[in-house]
Length: 367
Ligand SMILES: Nc1nc2c(ncn2[C@@H]2O[C@H](COP(=O)(O)OP(=O)(O)OP(=O)(O)O)[C@@H](O)[C@H]2O)c(=O)[nH]1
Ligand SMILES: [Zn+2]
Image (cartoon, rainbow, N blue to C red):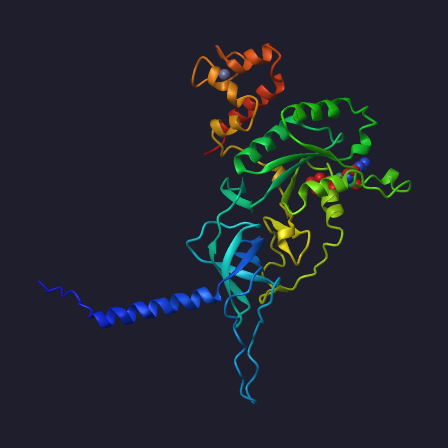
């Protein structure tokens, strides 16, 4: 049997190794800087430089006859294409990261992600849950008189907000059309959500008929006040005016920062899962919009029944009064406190029905 000899290090050797490790760590720390994930392309991300590293790499001297090698100077607010260290969680637009840049290649590497205040995820087409936006403050639930508002969809987004830790804001766009429908249904809906404590803004950003009379974009200033210095997502069904709102809020979203991407073939034709459009491209603390295509097909089946009921703020406290702990709150559930509250006129029947629908949906989908 071979004798396994444990290698004994002398004190001096240990000291030398410690010192070496420390200095390695120092050089990593010195090259790290802050950044914000602006967009996501499959395995690569775009990161904006929000602080410079302690030690800024300097371009090496080149001998007079040598060809000039590639060198990318590091500057604040530039956007770099980055790889991600393997053991990090999946990142999304809005994530705040620590990363370093390789001036010799024009690529960066994300080393760490800072704790998130919120995370919005959605299932991809393979039913795998993917984060789409991190550190979002507000989810603007956009609806309109036409196409008619779908309260089920609004309730679904409210559940999502609750679960993701994001504040909901109801945005009734196309307010100019309220007169045409006499505003009865939509105003009633707004009143119902106001009674539950949800805030709302009325906007009218893009009404062709009125454009000749006034260029006023109704409600836009009020909306801006709500979302100032905040990171916001616009969600809602097709045709309610999300793009119109985003364009109105970011009239000059033309490229004003330098995007560094050595390999221009990458990303040009790939679609992003989400992109952060800042209000001020040179100061990300001023907030912005996370544009997330496809958010309207938001499934919520990854949530548990408890998650779902806690998104129904007025119903959640009542559920403990149900006769059975595993009450499904359907119309014929015996001793259901929610239906008793409907009978007593304390809560809206459609909210209880939506709760049941969403719970059933969560139950029947895979995972
Ligand atoms: N009357 C009126 N029409 C509006 C208003 N805002 C947007 N529209 C119109 O509504 C239509 C749909 O607007 P979009 O901004 O494309 O809607 P969207 O929600 O982005 O739709 P998707 O891209 O399909 O999700 C367009 O024809 C707009 O001109 C508004 O305030 N009033
Ligand atoms: Zn019940």
